[in-house]
Amino acid sequence: MRALTLKAGLALVPGLALAGLLAGCVQAPKPMYQWGGYQDQLYEHFKGDSQHPEEQLRVLEAQAQKARAGGAALPPGFRAHLGMIYLRLGRDAEARQQLEAEKASFPESAQYMDFLLKRLAAARS
Image (cartoon, rainbow, N blue to C red; front, side):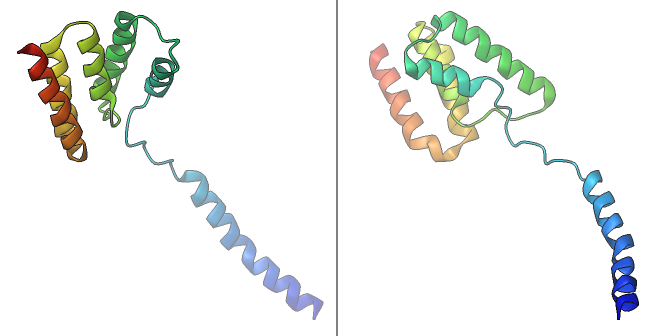
């Protein structure tokens, strides 16, 4: 009986070794978005301890450039946040461009982006 159990256990060893080998070769899935420091920037912004808008803009633009260079997508809300920073700096044309880009990249944001774009147009009038 003991010999039979030992044989059954030894029969499992190659299968387990193969499974371990294959599991070790599997690569982690590539993230959908290039988050970078965006979440930290957003947290600082809403916490109220954020940097000057020019500094935020510099950091976020550098992150966007890094994402483009790596072929990664920007996360949801990134372009909208960038647009809001442009608005704070009085750069309306760039803000509009970012809000339109957010709307195109994430159609589920269209209603809110349209609302912001209408407010932007009304403020210009």
